[in-house]
Image (cartoon, rainbow, N blue to C red; front, side, top):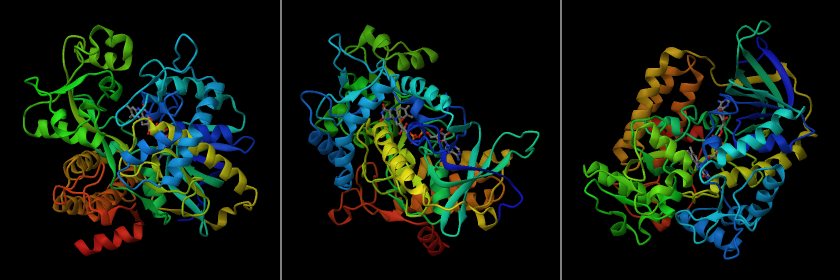
Length: 527
Ligand SMILES: Cc1cc2nc3c(=O)[nH]c(=O)nc-3n(C[C@H](O)[C@H](O)[C@H](O)COP(=O)(O)OP(=O)(O)OC[C@H]3O[C@@H](n4cnc5c(N)ncnc54)[C@H](O)[C@@H]3O)c2cc1C
């Protein structure tokens, strides 16, 4: 589809997404002109706003960059890219200092040193945050005013990128649907740019129970796939083991730090179950805890977080965000146990990038949770994702800034929209069936039959939505790519557990890559 019938706008760099990845890249790109678009407003609708515990970085006297890298590699279960992990952990302390300089009020001891805490699978106190569990909010309160006050950044809120625009084999913008105005009654605009960064976050909204904002449905992955970008490690989806199972959607998160403070996981009859399943007990890697919790729930024994003895009356002060969620549903964590369930929380896979955030398609970069550069492998170490967004946004910005000078002005007559666009709000029933399908067939425990069924069903939903609702068609396509990758990995590793291949296979100890063309070839074999 050509862009001639649409209003168009120009900028040097188009950034899709207003979480840590998008905002930090935008700030660093001045004096280039940036257009930043996001689906909601900057104060809500990103996982960044909701991040609780903080950023991992080797800042403590008993810690080292090497130990941080080793813990990251161990959590990643043999398939992280060690070079990329090395550079992220090395650059972490310097990037945290930049946030301090920008004004992020990290918690400190009375002597002025950082207050560091420990999370699961970290061998040191290494997580730096704000106010116990309000790191994301404090980050946004500091960074958003800086972004808003920049005269180089144009922010378009409540707008959705529906498809990428290409000039030949180079990405040169996106089709955006925003608010209708007098001069643009359809709200449809093509934003032309010399570089495009996808920073669209995770995929939680593809699942029935998630801790993510519902609008995070992996559209960036689908848009990148349609222009031929390589995708990596898509099968690795992390389920947070201790989302609060209290009937709220998104499910509020009972942060890992609560277990770091000694809270226990118990069944409804009060029996601990993690000590039998892993030597680290409640602080075992997330996938192990998620399966432990899932097993108790499937077996009808119930699963609860018991904070009464370890935290008790300190709970309100130590974990104000979780305390607020408890209050909303009438639970007093000082005296009562919190019911929990695993919930989709983080996607290790995404658009494949190099260490500068470049994708395999020219003109296109990706950063944050929507990208996959090899730092997380089969499982993310807690609090490494805010760090990944921080470290790689700086790398993306530098790489984009170094490249746009050589890009010629874009000729609109030579550009094309890649993908069908459209918005039909009557299709919400399709979203419900997609979320149920993903939770049942591409969830904590997977099988070949379930995954094949998911591939076929997601393709059906995609074709039903195609041309009518770009966001649902994109969600379904991303879901299909995840299910296909999960089918193709015939082993269990990190967060990916196959009941039909329950062991890790040394022969498969490598990252996975897939393109849309390959996924379509696989689909054709199932028909
Ligand atoms: C409850 C919770 C607690 C967490 N706690 C921690 C923690 O303590 N430490 C840690 O390291 N990680 C934590 N995480 C994970 C971490 O917050 C995320 O991985 C990280 O913030 C992702 O940042 P991002 O910029 O990639 O994406 P996000 O912050 O999710 O932002 C995505 C942006 O993309 C926009 N967008 C998406 N699609 C489109 C589209 N089609 N068009 C326009 N805009 C679009 C969205 O509106 C949003 O602005 C937590 C996550 C959750 C949900």
